[in-house]
Image 1 (cartoon, rainbow, N blue to C red):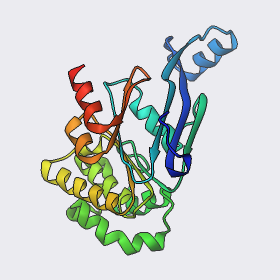
Image 2: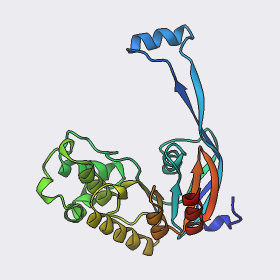
Image 3: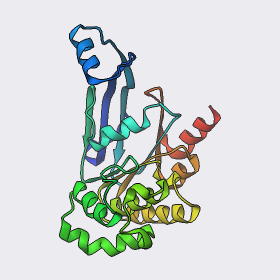
Length: 248
């Protein structure tokens, strides 16, 4: 981990590993699963999604997490968001977190967009009264005025992305975690999202961005973390890290 005064860090990741157990055998129902477990015949194989990862992010910095599919990017973000606990090592996050790490997370697809604004707001820790105060702003930013009373099961991925981003960024958290959300939707709305990220960063929000777009990472983030099969390949200033990744 780079030599940084720990009092200036908003995120500290110390020698973190994350192991999952992959079950190769297929079962057709719960009964068959239980029987195999009782007989000791349901075998799993350990899979290390992250291996001894260490880095720190200072207050005021924004971090891009890059790497090919399966490199451990989303797993790292979920650990930082507190969705999962590491198998080994320590993750320390200081301050409030607004995670936008999975399209549709926190939504009930049977409910309307209007109902989901209040539901998702509650998931993020906002009161109903505070969500009422910002409701019109969320609708305006998402550009979903005509669909506000439509069940979101009928929404496209772009519409879900708009709604989720509008809710997650309605306040200015200490840390905003964004996983590939900017890759969904039209170019004009993407620019609108980038403008909001810049606005939040100017007010002290640390942005953690998982992206396959090196252009987005360099534009938004000052630092970058390159993961490959769960290992840290490179960590440092965004442009040289992204350049090295593109040349690999």
